[in-house]
Amino acid sequence: MPILPIEKYFGEFQLVYTFYEAMPTGVTVSETGRIFVCFPKWGDDVKFTVAEIVGDQLRPYPNLEANLANPENIANSFISVQSVVADGRGTLWVLDTGAPNFSVPIKGGAKLVAVDLKNNKLRKVYNFTEDVILPTTYINDVRFDFRVGKAGYAYITDSSSKGPGAIIVVDLENENAFRRLNGANSTSPDPYFLPKVEGQILMNRNKDGSTSPFRMASDGIAISPDGKLLFFCPLTSRHLFSIPTEALRDRTIPEMDLLYHVKYWGEKGASDGMITDAKGNIYAGDYENNSIRKILPNGTMKTIIHDPRILWPDTFSISPDQYLYVIVNQLHRQARFHYGKDLRQKPYSLLRMKIGEFPAPTFL
Image (tube, rainbow, N blue to C red; front, side, top):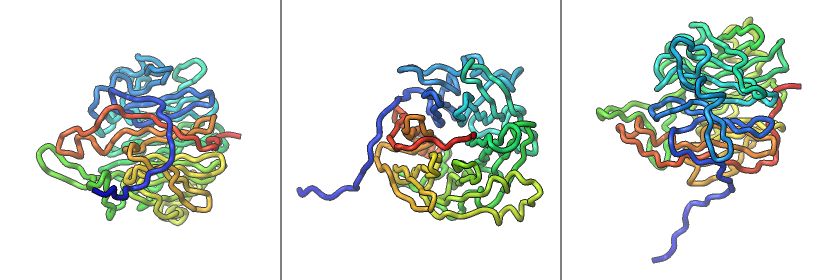
């Protein structure tokens, strides 16, 4: 029997950590090299939704009490965290969906929390009004710029599967938040996109045998090193978009006119997480092809790693020692996509690869 040619794989990564219990989604590396991860409550036994990796252990962060959802103290307890982001200046930002299993967000549960990395204590909680967090909202990922306004701004993706997608803009000085590109084509699922992972069409397949298309709105988000451009993409799409952050913040621009400020960058592959480095390069996963792409500021795209073990690259982070970190979590093998049968194989993993670039700054 002759040996036949096989698909070419390339690029190298290092295994940082393996997860044998709950499935992780988010990762971030602080300016001092501390590594934080999060575990949303999607059906696994989540003992704590935010953790720090210390040596070979996962430790609830900032403590176990903060990770125990307390109905009487929703503002100061984590419910179901989708994303964690270290801002490079001593703060860990925790994005709590307040929506276990993609349910309607618990009143007051969806929030952005600032944790002081020096004393490991909650410093401030940003809550949202009902016109920002809709019954269909699933806040997914967040980016920051502290060079504008008195205290900076945050930009959050609403990756709703049942309602309008959007970019939520938060003034960190006065806690004022508002939705932008609400239901726009650029923040909405691509209706013609048919995701294919591991050779099979990815769709909702329920226990009762019924099926429906897999649709999720704006998810991946990245900000340019100067803070002037925000890049974003729906989860079920291969398209990349950007918009000037100044236009997002300017509420005198009507929604209909805001659409003209959006720039289309072309196809980059279907991505979950994205991140930018200090030179303005964007790193984006391609969950259909077990790959990670690098997109240069001029729009040129190249694949930097293609490996069969990259089974759904989720969130990215760039460390101060110039590594690109990525959570690999087999999201597409969840029971919701396979008639109630969980096909995930533990462990899930945290990988890293040397890119030789620093993370994009968020402050002067």
